[in-house]
Length: 141
Image (cartoon, rainbow, N blue to C red; front, side):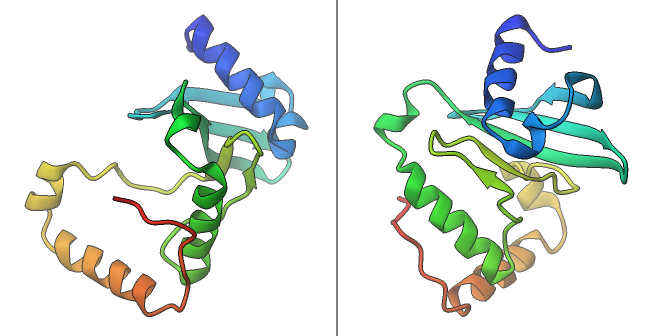
């Protein structure tokens, strides 16, 4: 169950995403995930075709002062076209982002060090991106 603040955040964000806005709250199961600068939710939607899982990202308070959301959108779409990022299903002018929820876990530094092949898989993804011809709209440093 979400806190009142998280429910308010989710409701406002879902209203900005046509796919979610078209569903009733009863069709949605929502859980808060981690996030350093943003508020992130796992959303499971019960629809005619079955259960669909999404990641809904809401900009954290004050992040507009240091995150260029237009560049972020362009970069996320470029990563998708390159085959190293999920599809961008929705990206509002305010920075609310909806994408498919990918299976797996968030890779912590410890997991990266201890999982066999993690560094090699990261290298393949970076090589794929760099050789894709896609250009990012900004630098991330």
